[in-house]
Length: 316
Length: 219
Image 1: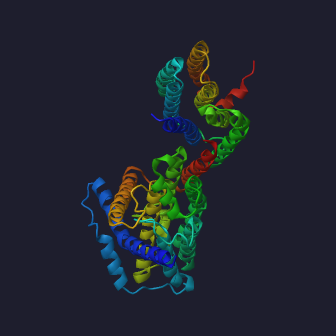
Image 2: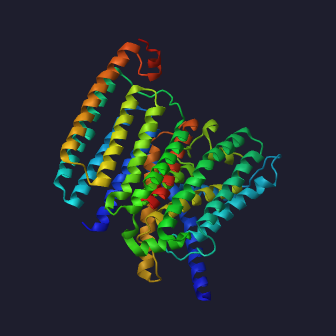
């Protein structure tokens, strides 16, 4: 038992470190693919690492009106993402799943968002406040969607722990595949785009403050604190991709301790995350950002998909 | 093909039919409405095809082919032609906003499930679960017809209702006698033709397809 806990903790820590280390690379790859589509050469895929290193070397300045919230938020952000990274299966199903299930995961991410929204309003900049209110509008629909989409998988496998969901799907194989899975997958993918401020919802490369959602809240940050916030957001993207990959199509993930299984697991997850990153880059190149007031249409559509997924579990 | 996989395919296609009716509710552009309807009819045709494969009833194959030819090829083409001819591009703002409409339609889908539940509980054929979906599709079709203003989207709504009824017929009885099915196809086809002409006339008389203006008609 003790050995089990130690083993799980070891792999959880290993996976969390891997995720933090890989997340800037995935963002770099998305930017590179987007650059190709725009016929640009684009910056190197290692550029996010250089950015992080540069920002971490610099001092940060704070607005004189900012309270402790602005100072604490970067640490809360990186900490909540770090804890979630311990609980999400990445290349093996060994993770700290027994500490908390998917509801804890979703609400730890909500804690991150909540403090980021507060920090956006804290410094007293107009754009920060606009970003915050928009973020809340988006997340009020995205959060139930995300929960319902993962609940569908929880219903199919009969457990709410993320690593157990991927374990039982990976072991049972395609027998558990139902129509509900695809509905939930589509709903979760739209939530992934909305939660991580990707294109139909928000433009991550924007320089126009009036259209910002996510960037608007980070405007007041600089130096080390900005680095922490950016890194937390990038890792959040990788976390969402990992949940998408391992909850909805976990085949290939390592379910035992053999070296071969681990190697296959690492290759499988990297391939899946690259496919997701490519899909995101394709969508970002092919569509334009939606008008803010048309966003609820898209988001309710994804909510309806998730609701139907749960419902079709009972009907079909 | 194994039994399990066949059942999943049939259920999956029925789910696609339901899903496309939700897309129809979320859409306000005419050409996209027609395209989504085409997809729905295609899924319905394939559904009939797999049911035919499962039951071995030959006349359902014919019904499947007819569904695809009439509902997924001829009718959409005719609708596209009418849309091009009278230059109607976009629905005016629907009576109820799209997010609310989607939630209402989810409620309708739940109602469909509750109505169909006694039948599902007693039935023993593989497509019995699709009855809930077909009731939901019919209800969504009614809602679509009530909430839209342009005559063109109301025509599409009528076709959605018809698709729902067709799904119900196949899923609880494994298809009606061939002569009845043929009669229905002919009816739908003629209805769409007549309504196409009708829409054209409405457009010429009122210079709009907005059915609110038709309340002014007096004899």
